[in-house]
Length: 126
Image (cartoon, rainbow, N blue to C red; front, side):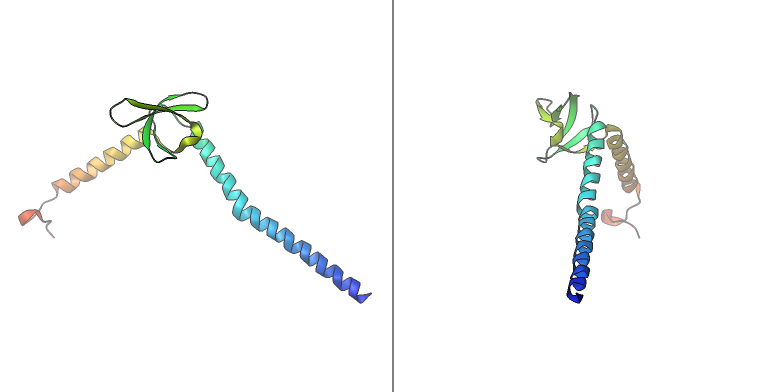
């Protein structure tokens, strides 16, 4: 009889460990994957014409037209390379407004750097 009651405790401990393992897998594997999927869905829903995108193949381009599941992306400066792509092929989106603000900040930093006094042979004064 004592053997059977000891086996019951072992069985309940096994069930507890299995539950702990399932919770661990959910917290560290499934939940972050769901968050990433939600972030990507939000990104895709906020895409607009004029945004700069990075494709999953590593090419940078500008969105010129958006249809249901197809996005037409223009690559390069020559305006001749326009490729229709699926929305799922877009890895990152940079809003046009953000790009302009970043370029202005960079230009200001470059102007400040150029206007600093320099010593002999173009070296910075200490």
